[in-house]
Image (cartoon, rainbow, N blue to C red; front, side):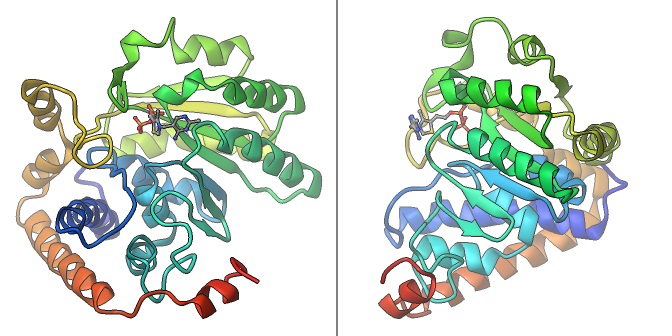
Length: 303
Ligand SMILES: Cc1ncc(C[n+]2csc(CCOP(=O)(O)OP(=O)(O)O)c2C)c(N)n1
């Protein structure tokens, strides 16, 4: 991890502080709707960011980190969630339904995979040299659309990368209580490439996945990459059904403390600066006027 660039460290801790700040403003009753944070999983999109530069990312209900790693735009995302001026989609999409060129998230589990296959087919036909990458959780392997999409991806050989954030739980249901066999065996049954990543060492992850993404892009060999990861926060806001000991054990293996130890003062300096920047951003976005009907019309959301 000590081979990380300053930009990587900034992005990692930036996503961490963004999510913590979000839970705080929700707790203060300053935001409507809901939110799902990626606390503990931040390194996944950070590791993938340079490999998917210029590609299309399809995200899910836990998508802030995916967006921030792809665009480095905390102001637009925060304004979107808080319904303030400058929001990515004029506050229409909120936390889960964000659209921007090169990015689309949906709160409907499994919905992104058929879209990714359609996009991949388009990229293949037009020679776009682009990958459609879709993030899903392990709990989403109960959705039929996932299998329909994998079938067509394999048959049509489209440049689709499925990124599974396997955190071992879906809302309150442990994966062991709902998934027979393994995701890897299911993927291999379609003849697709499957890679499992169990580390949070970002340079090591990039080294392992660069050839995988290359094959997806240039040989149109769809692939599934599973990250064994940890959800440190509640499913949404106050709904963690796990025991305190279980969550404590997950926190003990978090990348954050490990990176702080590995980088020492370099980490502390970046961490403190980024935390202050996020706090300032929250205050600044909160003080902005709400998104207006004019913003919505401009975004094409109303006629
Ligand atoms: C089709 C559909 N069914 C149910 C839900 C409600 N729901 C939202 S997130 C979630 C659990 C998702 O678990 P997983 O895919 O493992 O992702 P994680 O939350 O662990 O990141 C559920 C059941 C939904 N959003 N969409």
